[in-house]
Image 1 (spheres, rainbow, N blue to C red):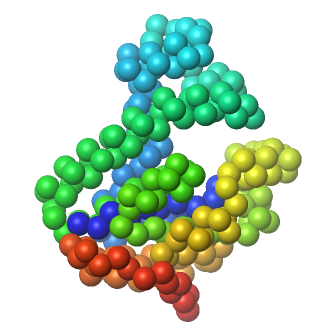
Image 2 (image 1 turned 60 degrees about the vertical axis):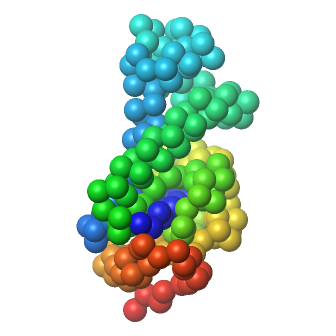
Length: 213
């Protein structure tokens, strides 16, 4: 079994890469989905949010996610309080799912798709790390189009994350999300083929940048 961390900057193409890895045969664990499940109605996570931020944020045990997002965005202290509730639950679920998948398929390539993989230090638990990158103009254009944001709003979201140059330092593989889809798919396939060969091995892969041609 090989546990692969997948991360990158916002609007760099991480979700596209995750989809291509799944198409190639990897089993993808989506941190966003686990975070959503952690605050599902009636869960301990939802109750913890109500205690931390007030029952009006989770009336009847149902978290008002839009109100919660508005409450914590741009407020680092509130955001850290929310992350202290969500992140441990996400990581426990990820570890449980990883064990279950590995029990079914000892040679599986398991990809943990997490935007905050490096910020949380979770990359240290991975066998290898893939970082998807793009330049600032590409991120801005994609965010403005995708989420219908102003340039200032898009820039605020980008700068709220760690710089890509920092994330690249933790990468064993770097995939350029600016490339045409067919080239990104080809690059992902090359990376996956190498990961597949390494699955079941204790040898950690060397950092590499596979050329797109």
